[in-house]
Amino acid sequence: MQWSLTSMIHRLAAPRTWALALLALSSTWASAQAPQADSAPPTAVAAPAESGGIRSANIFEIAPDASTDPNYANQTNAERKQVQPGNNAPMWRDVSKGVTGYSSLPYPEAGNLIQGFVQYPGSRLTNAGEAWRQVRNNWLIPYGGSLLIIVAVAIGLFYKAKGTIPLHGKETGRVIERFTYVERAAHWVNAIAFVALAVSGIVMAFGKFFLLPVIGTTLFGWLAYALKNLHNFVGPLFAVSLVVVIITFARDNLPSKEDITWLLKGGGLFGGHEVPSHRFNAGEKVLFWSGVFLFGLLVVGSGVFLDKIVPAVEYTRANMQVAHMIHAAAAVLMMVMFMGHIYMGTLGMQGAYKAMRTGYVDETWAKEHHELWYDDIKAGKIPAQRSANSPASSIANQAAKA
Image (cartoon, rainbow, N blue to C red; front, side):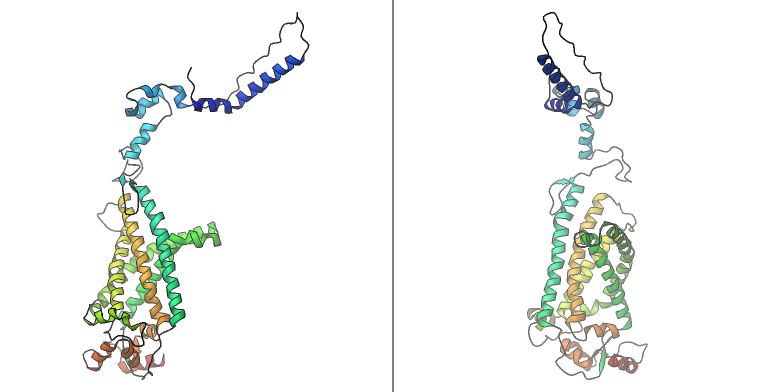
């Protein structure tokens, strides 16, 4: 009889084996201690009756020579069942190869339980589900989270060192309309939607690291569930408002030759005087075309795909995985860029928030921060009051008092 190591371990570990061994040992010790008589026959020890219950079985013990069959590696699951019941290796081998069988997955992946092999940027060559997991857990989460923290700390240090950029001259009391009502409405709708998406996205992606240990699993579970639904419903609002923002501000964000000087001098941020610029400086234009246009459209496109609201598209696992990776990477880069924008529009510059809240800026502010735009207004090339619905004087007076 052939014995496998697994079989020997099973037999040695079985309680019945140990009971028999102890019984035999005690019987031997008792017979050695008892007085021996020449005429007395040896005492017979009755073996215990077989106990009931389920006995474990080793598939290789059932047919230990099954692997000697030349066709062993090519057997189907039905053929393997005849020689080694319970050995489903052929089935799982087919599953890992992506062989079509039956599963409850919807069309067009019905019957395909495990995806085929692929290598995404940052992953090993493995099945697509595992490759996506490696990209998410090894790249998007650690490096994306680190980038957000680094930028936040850098902004805090910059504010501590520089503080709010003040006006160097006195306000004149004469105001210029910088943003119309439509422009401000488009901006604020998009900004509020962006903040809601950013907060909910950060909690869903990174919340288990900094929030879950504080509030516990139950509250975190409810919070993540609520924010997930908020994220899904606010997404389409952000998409529509983003398109409106792009159409509204694209013309004034077109590149000009003066932008090169602004970029070479860093906008004068570390000097004592800002570099002259038009309505939007080169830094704002870079933010617009990269953060709003490029990353914004990538986030919206991938997000709409993940919401499954794009018609005539196959929502396979592979497509959803690629969409998620694009969505997460673009969202982190977009958030990083807009952290700087939010800082400059609130704490970073005196009068910047007021401009977007009321739509008006003082002439001194316009001259110091956007001198070329101010010169065009003074030359009559651009009207100081662009809104046609409200009298300029009334709105200007309200802005001046604000």
